[in-house]
Image (cartoon, rainbow, N blue to C red; front, side, top):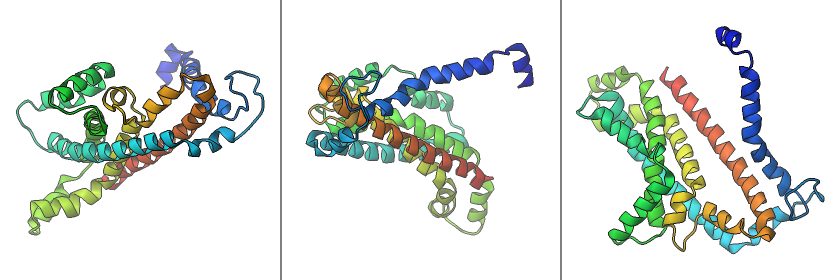
Length: 265
């Protein structure tokens, strides 16, 4: 670190400026959500909580929130379940085309979202699956799977395989060992994966926009509202709540991820 500072003395200043540029718009979101006026500009006309109070009376918003919770919950369970077994296979076993298959699993992270969404829409329509929450769940599971595999690989990388071997020596079956030894130890990683994949699904817009049809998720609902200036204050209030919830979920997920490493050690 000292060597880098010697050759790049302005690196800390650059990092600070980058963080300010990146997060200033995000920090302004809750500030304007308390503004009494409908125009997003300084100076504020006053402080109010009425935009937050109005959120609970919007039936379309509640329905979109419920749709996002359903999609996020099912997609998190599906992607984490698939990621659990995929990560175990990648860490423990050698098989043909292992690196290629792992690269294919991670491919959604680098493919533009609009390409994935349009391709899925064409494929689903061709097999008779119309845009719906079911289509969104399938799309979000595909999108969240790389995150689940990455988190679970980290959990299995730190796992002491001799614990499973000891259980086998004591007469435990493969399924019993997995249930009584492996799962309890990697459970913090599973919880972290569930939280991260739920957050990824809950915040995702492009796939939901293409695949939701007349059952919009919350990000699609927010997009439909920001086109109307009168609806903007409510959208800012809703965005502030979602921002806080996402931060809390990611903090909890990081806690369980770190706990996985400590438990494995």
